[in-house]
Length: 281
Image 1 (cartoon, rainbow, N blue to C red):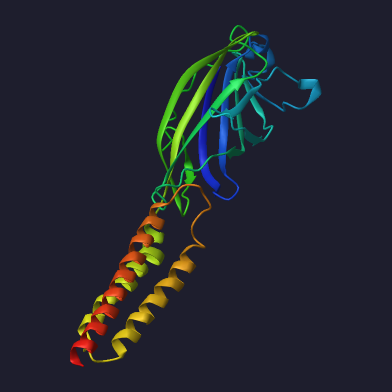
Image 2: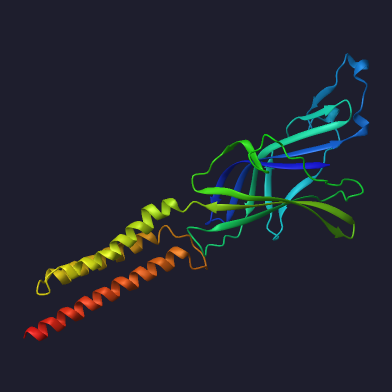
């Protein structure tokens, strides 16, 4: 049996619920010798379409399921779409729908983080002597190995580094073939750079302009305090953008460094101002 998997869109990527929802299509192809016929005996009919749930025309269909390798469960919500049967016994079944993946997010490099996803397609009931998964034929229409021709780009995430592997798992009931689909989802950090990182850096470097003010001017301290308060309020606002995680995101390290820098400059300005006043007296 040939198995292929195509992603048409990233519906949802949520660090809060630790889930990734894919809009995808699972394509299955196999041969059933019981469904062969001579087209000449049926008015040159060489292909038929069957409903897998229609009892009078019910045929054998594979029980291919989807999980993840790290033990997390993927919840496929795939349509019981029509099955195409050729007179040679070749059967083609495309099942569009959604796959909900329970994903552990690694956010140490946020907002430049890369999340690795590995889907495992296998049979739960039929070992290899009854149903063996043999892989996939690449479709020349696809942009990449997994992307549908009509793939819809996500505003915040890109899909990269598609890989395909064959494997197997031995249980007491027999050997079960497995197909691994690996890919990464990469966050687009440009928006975070524009609305978070760049303003934070500019605010922190405003401290330097305090050295251009006269030492004897009280506005020098007022200016530094204003920059300090602005940095505190902006940092508080930024924390609302940070995902909840045990990891320390890269953006948190940047703002910690900027905050320390602002504090050091403010302390130096206060010390130098105090030193100047004492020296003048």
